[in-house]
Amino acid sequence: MRQAEKNATWWSAALVLGGITAAMTPAILLAAGGAGVGFDAVVRGIESRYHAHANKIPFMGLISLVAGHATHGGVRGIHIAEIEHLDGPVDGTELNALVAAHMGAGWQRIVRDTSRSGDEQSLIYVKPEGARLGMLVVDLDHAEMNVVQISINPDKLSDEITEHRHGKSSDDSDDKSDEKPDSNESE
Amino acid sequence: MKRNTVLASLLALGLAMAGAGAARAQDELPAPSPIEKTLADRAAHVTEVTLDKNMLAFAGKFMNKDKDDDKDDKEAKEMIQGLRGVYVRDYEFDKDNEYTAEELEGLRKYITSSDWSPMVHERTKGAKEGTDVYLKLVNGQVQGLYVLDAEPRELSLVLILGPIDMDKIGSLGGNFGIPKQAVKDVKKAQKEAGK
Image (cartoon, rainbow over all chains, first blue to last red; front, side):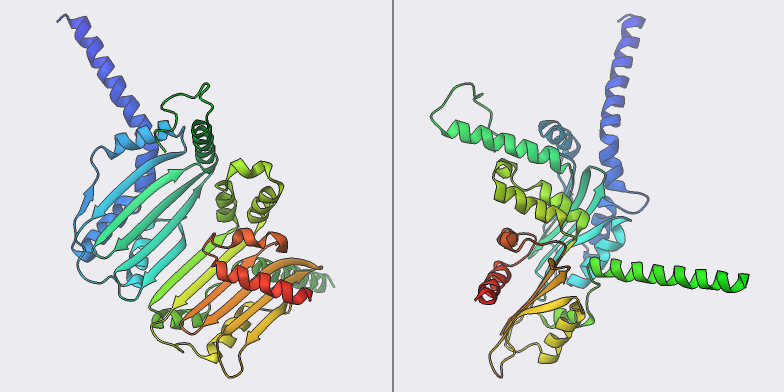
């Protein structure tokens, strides 16, 4: 391969990497939210306190990008961690304090659902980010805990849902005019 | 003379700020009552929902846009987006009578001030269970709704702040953590008040 071709290949690779990094930066910043706080800090805090290991979904960054594209920015910055064997009852107050301590500034809890037995706990935190809304859900169902963070744009997401709903209703009817065959596959 | 003027100005400023602070406090969701903590400690299951004005504005955006053409739904959506806060607490207990009459009274008094008028106070003689519905009326307009529903093993309190169209109150039931029963209680109270 000639030197000029090699250079061109390197430049292309660098541009692709740069593009991916630029696209992922908001999601990474959202998850980190500053030093020692954010999604990863919450998950690490839970792992440390309950001596558990969280499974991260492979290619989540890519999935998040695709979701962002598919919803026209309605949903992006998806982070999911799953803890499958969380031993022992979880004290709701302690879990809430732990999550709150690792969330970082600006987050507010909107829902807390807790059982004294300790096997069912749900927390929902939100953070307004201009037109978007960051949302973090911590859900424990017996020994399985899921931690999910997303960033949503209510306007865009609502438009997207409405569009799909219209697609479905027109598809359900006998009118098979100009509806694309895959228009409601993601329903 | 000059010193007196400065002092008077500072006093006026202080009073104005205190007044503004009090007015703001009336508009904002309350800090949890200490009674809530003791109830939560005793309850087998606790649900807490706290939505401020910003959250309600966001939540309103998720309401079905398909129905924006429907006048009633559009008005309900506008009402929700205009609310200043929703505060819901639900405590489920393992046994009957896990709360006291004093705690109920404390929860009633903690929220309601002079602006609040009792709409319904339903109690069976000698029993703690029953329903209280209060309205916050400002210049004849409903600016708040407070429902305290006490069942033998469940205690629910719902506080909604902001301009409320009582005809659209049904749209809140089952949404934002507001129990449908609370809305039913309010509708029942409306009917009885209309008799």
